[in-house]
Amino acid sequence: MREMGVRGVLVYCADHRCGHWTTLSADRWPDEVRLSDIEPRFTCSACGRSGADVRPDFNWNKPVSSAMGYR
Image (cartoon, rainbow, N blue to C red; front, side, top):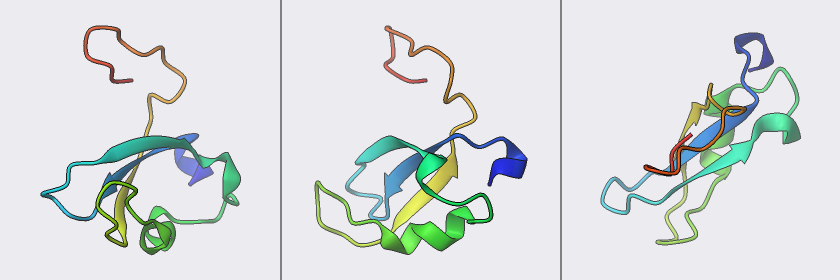
């Protein structure tokens, strides 16, 4: 994960109908962890479904745009 420069992750609910997502710091996991290794560990706080789609957030250190709320 760190070899790719990943410092943050985008976590999307596994249920495409839910649409819940969040951003997290990737510092909690060791360097050798793959994103696919942590996907089953998540449970959506909105709908309760287990599993997630975890993607690198390459813009982790960039300021949040006030217009859209995205990084």
